Amino acid sequence: MKWIRFTLDTHTDAMDMLSYMLDEIGVEGIEIEDHVPLSEEDKKKMFVDILPDPEENDGTAKVHFYIEPENCDPEKVMLQVQNIFQEIKEFCEIGKGTISLSETEDKDWINNWKTFFKPFRAADNIVIKPTWETYEKENEDDILIEIDPGIAFGTGSHETTRLCIQALNEYIKPGDSVLDVGCGSGILSIAALKLGASHATAIDIDETAVRTAAENMAVNHLRPEQYTLYDGDLITNSYLKVRAGTGHDIVVANILADVIIPLTGVIRPHLKKGGLYITSGIIDTKEDEVRQALIDQGFEIIRVDQMKEWRCFIAR
Image (cartoon, rainbow, N blue to C red):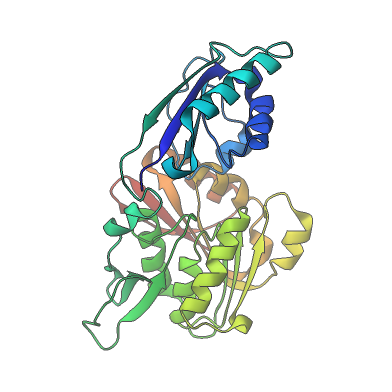
């Protein structure tokens, strides 16, 4: 589908008022480009360990929105936007206050990425398959996991996820209880249950991820009594710390080093004596920091696995 793309050159001071006024004229969603530094809360939600160098915040911003051609009179929309600029410039800085338009390519931007997500082997006996693909088992004993990540993090193809799956494959025993912190699409919890765990408790700070994880549990024919899902921050949320439970045989956390380090300081009560703490999402430049955090909290590091520049610690 082709869309008409409207681009407003403006100032960050105008963002709130522009968003409100554009909504009033029927614009259902906007895309913002600016140089405002990320907050600490935003950084926690970024699934990367090395953020790009920030550009100097000069106050400039671009606002994009898209309208289907058959539902749009471009001249009318441009006039409405110019009227909005005139109305709000008395109350805030609007920068250039200009609008331009272009036509996007005829592509399905939301679903195009799916063409690159194909079935793959995450461990010797574990195959990950997108829900929209067909797959014939190569080996009778293969464990098949079906995933639709939606907009949550976790197709299973990333090195950090594969490292965790391989560790779970090696260490899970029938009947184990697993706590999955930062569950994303739920792939590690699903893997744990299919490998024989009796129950998985999965937590993510993103409500969307938790909903996606629930959908993927159902797709994989797992029963509701086999898992519990929560949204929230286990590090800071006292209520969640209680709900997450104690005495887990394995805690797995595939997040980021900068989250794993403080998590390591609060995770011990959730593990049974001798339980395993499997952590990944750790870029090689952060390996020493994570190692020291584990040692400081009294963990014995069993081994460190690696795949390309990523590390996975297995400790108890």
